[in-house]
Image (cartoon, rainbow, N blue to C red; front, top):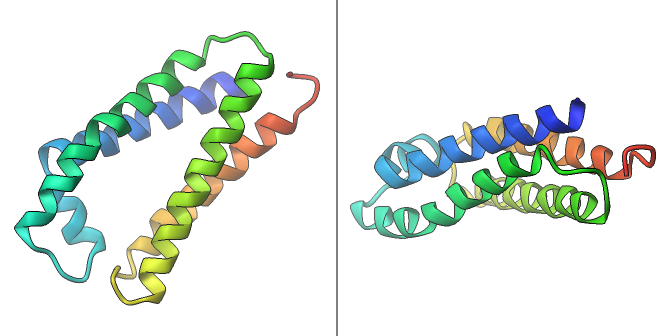
Length: 125
Protein backbone atom coordinates (compact mmCIF):
# COMPACT_ATOMS: atom_id res chain seq x y z
CA UNK A 1 0.00 0.00 0.00
CA UNK A 2 2.86 2.40 0.85
CA UNK A 3 4.56 1.84 -2.50
CA UNK A 4 1.34 2.24 -4.46
CA UNK A 5 0.62 5.53 -2.72
CA UNK A 6 4.18 6.75 -3.20
CA UNK A 7 4.11 6.09 -6.94
CA UNK A 8 0.65 7.61 -7.36
CA UNK A 9 1.32 10.73 -5.29
CA UNK A 10 4.70 11.38 -6.87
CA UNK A 11 3.33 10.75 -10.35
CA UNK A 12 0.51 13.26 -9.85
CA UNK A 13 2.98 15.78 -8.43
CA UNK A 14 5.36 15.33 -11.39
CA UNK A 15 2.49 15.68 -13.88
CA UNK A 16 1.50 18.91 -12.13
CA UNK A 17 5.03 20.28 -12.51
CA UNK A 18 5.11 19.17 -16.16
CA UNK A 19 1.77 20.88 -16.80
CA UNK A 20 3.03 24.14 -15.27
CA UNK A 21 6.18 23.95 -17.41
CA UNK A 22 4.00 23.44 -20.49
CA UNK A 23 1.30 26.07 -20.01
CA UNK A 24 2.82 28.63 -17.63
CA UNK A 25 6.60 28.26 -17.45
CA UNK A 26 6.97 31.92 -16.56
CA UNK A 27 5.22 31.30 -13.23
CA UNK A 28 7.73 28.55 -12.40
CA UNK A 29 10.69 30.77 -13.27
CA UNK A 30 9.30 33.81 -11.49
CA UNK A 31 8.86 31.75 -8.32
CA UNK A 32 12.35 30.25 -8.27
CA UNK A 33 14.70 32.30 -10.47
CA UNK A 34 16.23 35.64 -9.49
CA UNK A 35 15.95 36.85 -13.09
CA UNK A 36 13.40 36.00 -15.76
CA UNK A 37 13.51 36.51 -19.51
CA UNK A 38 10.68 35.44 -21.85
CA UNK A 39 13.09 33.29 -23.88
CA UNK A 40 13.41 30.98 -20.88
CA UNK A 41 9.93 29.63 -21.67
CA UNK A 42 11.06 27.71 -24.74
CA UNK A 43 13.37 25.17 -23.02
CA UNK A 44 10.82 24.64 -20.23
CA UNK A 45 8.02 23.94 -22.72
CA UNK A 46 10.30 21.73 -24.77
CA UNK A 47 11.25 19.65 -21.69
CA UNK A 48 7.71 19.44 -20.29
CA UNK A 49 6.64 16.34 -22.30
CA UNK A 50 9.49 14.36 -20.69
CA UNK A 51 8.35 15.48 -17.23
CA UNK A 52 4.74 14.60 -18.07
CA UNK A 53 5.87 11.18 -19.33
CA UNK A 54 7.81 10.51 -16.12
CA UNK A 55 4.68 11.27 -14.14
CA UNK A 56 2.65 8.89 -16.29
CA UNK A 57 5.25 6.13 -15.86
CA UNK A 58 5.18 6.57 -12.09
CA UNK A 59 1.39 6.39 -12.01
CA UNK A 60 1.37 3.30 -14.24
CA UNK A 61 4.02 1.63 -12.03
CA UNK A 62 1.79 1.77 -8.96
CA UNK A 63 0.19 -1.56 -9.92
CA UNK A 64 3.37 -3.44 -10.84
CA UNK A 65 4.21 -6.57 -8.92
CA UNK A 66 7.28 -6.35 -6.72
CA UNK A 67 10.44 -7.36 -8.55
CA UNK A 68 13.70 -6.19 -10.08
CA UNK A 69 12.10 -3.70 -12.45
CA UNK A 70 10.09 -1.98 -9.72
CA UNK A 71 13.15 -1.83 -7.47
CA UNK A 72 15.20 -0.35 -10.31
CA UNK A 73 12.47 2.20 -11.00
CA UNK A 74 12.52 3.19 -7.31
CA UNK A 75 16.29 3.70 -7.47
CA UNK A 76 16.11 5.64 -10.74
CA UNK A 77 13.38 7.88 -9.36
CA UNK A 78 15.36 8.48 -6.18
CA UNK A 79 18.44 9.42 -8.19
CA UNK A 80 16.40 11.73 -10.41
CA UNK A 81 15.00 13.58 -7.40
CA UNK A 82 18.43 13.74 -5.76
CA UNK A 83 19.75 15.26 -8.99
CA UNK A 84 16.97 17.83 -9.16
CA UNK A 85 17.51 18.72 -5.50
CA UNK A 86 21.23 19.09 -6.17
CA UNK A 87 20.69 21.46 -9.06
CA UNK A 88 18.29 23.53 -6.95
CA UNK A 89 20.76 23.77 -4.10
CA UNK A 90 23.58 24.67 -6.47
CA UNK A 91 21.42 27.36 -8.07
CA UNK A 92 20.63 28.83 -4.66
CA UNK A 93 24.29 28.80 -3.58
CA UNK A 94 25.30 30.54 -6.80
CA UNK A 95 22.62 33.21 -6.47
CA UNK A 96 20.62 32.13 -9.51
CA UNK A 97 17.64 30.86 -7.51
CA UNK A 98 15.54 32.56 -4.85
CA UNK A 99 15.14 31.32 -1.30
CA UNK A 100 11.89 29.57 -2.35
CA UNK A 101 13.96 26.90 -4.07
CA UNK A 102 14.99 25.52 -0.69
CA UNK A 103 11.40 24.41 -0.06
CA UNK A 104 11.43 22.56 -3.36
CA UNK A 105 14.82 21.05 -2.50
CA UNK A 106 13.46 19.80 0.83
CA UNK A 107 10.45 18.18 -0.88
CA UNK A 108 12.67 16.60 -3.53
CA UNK A 109 14.97 15.17 -0.87
CA UNK A 110 12.01 13.68 1.02
CA UNK A 111 10.74 12.05 -2.18
CA UNK A 112 14.21 10.69 -2.95
CA UNK A 113 14.58 9.22 0.55
CA UNK A 114 11.13 7.60 0.37
CA UNK A 115 12.02 5.94 -2.95
CA UNK A 116 15.37 4.78 -1.57
CA UNK A 117 13.61 3.28 1.45
CA UNK A 118 11.10 1.60 -0.84
CA UNK A 119 13.89 0.11 -2.93
CA UNK A 120 15.68 -1.24 0.12
CA UNK A 121 12.65 -2.87 1.73
CA UNK A 122 13.67 -6.46 1.07
CA UNK A 123 10.34 -8.03 1.94
CA UNK A 124 8.61 -5.97 -0.76
CA UNK A 125 11.05 -6.94 -3.52
